[in-house]
Length: 191
Image (cartoon, rainbow, N blue to C red):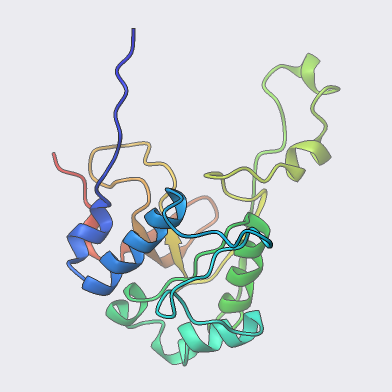
């Protein structure tokens, strides 16, 4: 036996108390719920004029959203007001790398553990296969970061202090540890 529940309130939008964020969230829900008319020939939808800004390239998008990032990245309030959403991990990774190249300092590389627990399974799961996996909610097998880069907490292994999805900014990069500070306090979990 199970109970079905439906989430109806976007808590992040509600906590921000920003009318434009609420409007955008409603527009996305309307699209997802099929409330936006679909053109019968093309099967496309017409977005409202205030839905988004269309740009011609990733570089134009980055320049529009993260103008002067090389000097503004230390301003947490400025950084907390900016994000680029992308549908595919490959696009996210490309955007992240382009934006990080605009920040001062050197990239630090982190590689995933490339192996399996059971030595007999090594033949079934070669390193190349493990490195090729690009799963939602999992970091890439080769992660490149800089101090000052915004990141997202994917999975908190020591709850309840921070919620999954909390935005952070890298403060220090060490061999096996990444030290980060919370970008804003909206998403602390309740004790």
